[in-house]
Image (cartoon, rainbow, N blue to C red; front, side):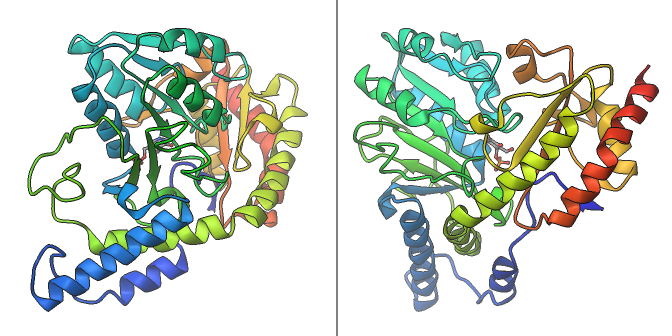
Length: 375
Ligand SMILES: Cc1ncc(COP(=O)(O)O)c(C=O)c1O
């Protein structure tokens, strides 16, 4: 099976597997005995490694259970402190959409901001929605389409309007330079930035929320007061250690990997869009290097994925799947392309040129088969 679904999750890095295998017996880092102190030292080393990779300060690093929890802590935690409207662009990840909808169900006003046919957020509409709002959010790289938002500009708009803003950087990590300082964390821009380790070859179940020191935020999990009181619970030292190794390596490899993956992605897009009735959902220069997203006429979304799966390729539609049933993509619908079938081919560290050659040789025939099966 050729694995081309790296935006869903990507294989563990060998260095992370080795770190897990070599794991020392770890105590609770809050314990005062020497074993606890050793665990606390390893944890702080991990926090520092993460901070350094992301151009942040170690006290800004709050470890969570993943991107979903990071989004929940940011949005719910800031909503606890700031009454008023929440500004949310269309086309966000479900962690954001569903958190916003839960807040709306509890009586919170949500101001939805439209995205264009290219999946870009309308900055004027975003700025207008910020007026008098309590908080705002934006995805950096769309997990479905791969489109990149100018989050630094959006965060600057939010700061100017006096509105705290969360940036979901889960799909940006390892593919674009994620720097807390260049996003203006705590200064001219974002208030919180969310990340997830398993998207860059770290373990599933470890995330990061970078939280500006001036962030108006309250915890959503209460307990022992760990991590500035923002995320109580015994800390996962081994998870943090492994996540820090993966994040640091992904950032180190960024320049060479993003160029390599962009070239592979462009080959997939060229072959896909040569098939009549297939378009690149967004222009590749507006997208992150690891995602090739096609919108296909005349086929059922699941049928394309099943057809390619039978032919030995693990790909995705990109949108959420509930109990094995594909949900229609809210992102394609917001782009006015809801009538087309999405196909997301997402590349990663282990993707080879040979994988892409094999996919390119198979894709036109697979689309024809899927269309015939859907008719
Ligand atoms: C953009 C984006 N945000 C948030 C998440 C959630 O991350 P996690 O799987 O670590 O909960 C994902 C994962 O698919 C994502 O792609």
